[in-house]
Each structure stands twice: as C-alpha cells, then as structure tokens.
Image 1 (cartoon, helix red, strand yellow):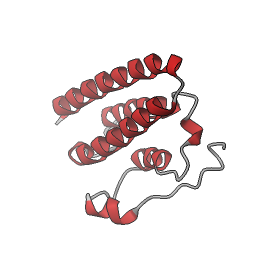
Image 2 (spheres, rainbow, N blue to C red):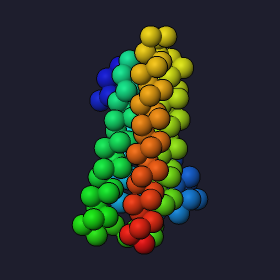
Image 3 (cartoon, helix red, strand yellow):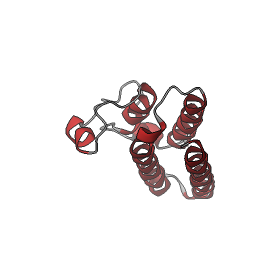
Length: 125
C-alpha cells in the first residue's frame, strides 16, 4: 500500500479536547501523516521518524521567523512527538530483526532532537 492510498483522517473531537482547534498548517500536515488507518507504508522504512524530524526543523524555522505563537506550541509539538514515537515503536515491532538496531538508534536521535527543540523553545519564551 502506498502512502497515497492510505485513508487519512483527523479525529476532530480529540483535537478539540486538547485545544488544537487553531492548529498551524505545519502541525496539521504532520498530524495527517500519523492518522492513517493503514500503517503498512511505514513497515519497511524509517519515514515516520524522518517526517517528525522534518517537522521539528520546520517548527524551529517558523519560531525563528515568528510565524507561530510560541506559547501555543507545547501542546501541538508534544502531541505530534508522541504520535511519532508511537509510530516509530510500532515500526520497531514489525521491522525485521536486522533492522531493529537502526530504528532504535533513529528513535534515540529523534528524542535528542526533540529535547533540543524544547530547550530552544523555552529560550524563546
């Protein structure tokens, strides 16, 4: 199944519940990647981690350009991060044995990148 074939949906009730009605386009695009009924697209690669890594970079850039209200970012970024980790660990379970070390390393890199992003965001507040 290709990424294109995945049926993408967003649970608007959940998003409203956590106060994300006015989410930015960057975060919205990232959320769509993780709300798929079928996750086969991610089975044989590390795309989900790369997607989130790119999202962190985009958010950092947006903060630097003052395109996003920093105070509203914590819920959005934490939510996307948790979804990315869930997807990464799910991929870890279904990847073949010889690839597990690779994805574990990538998850650790993602955690480190996210921690640096959180520190960066705090400095900007």
